[in-house]
Length: 130
Image (cartoon, rainbow, N blue to C red; front, side, top):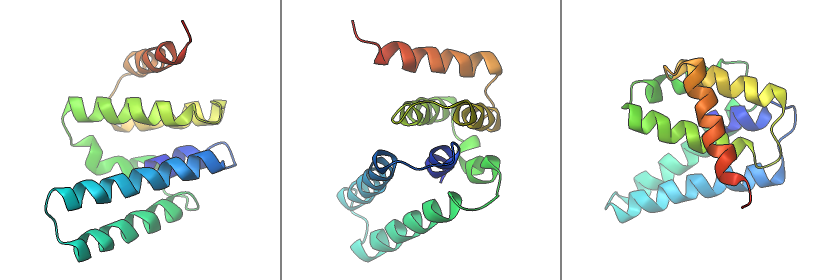
């Protein structure tokens, strides 16, 4: 749902963003099956994740609504999620609105402004050639 909020934050959702979100949900489902969960349950979870992503990109709920459970995770989980979301945001170019959305998500995940800026530097620096 947070990726859907990021994708829609600039007013348009690119095909690349849709593909990435779909692949992420399918990867989650495959990991659940590999972990031995019931296939019917996994299918229900997968459908719910797709519904949630479609709902999130159209609704007016704040990003903190969708980030609430993640905000209770360990700092390692929150950091990994934040880095992944920032990387995702660079897929079709980083608009000012998308960057603002990411700072809002970061605040919901209990990161300071300087920590979030460091995450951007970490991701952007890793994506530079050379």
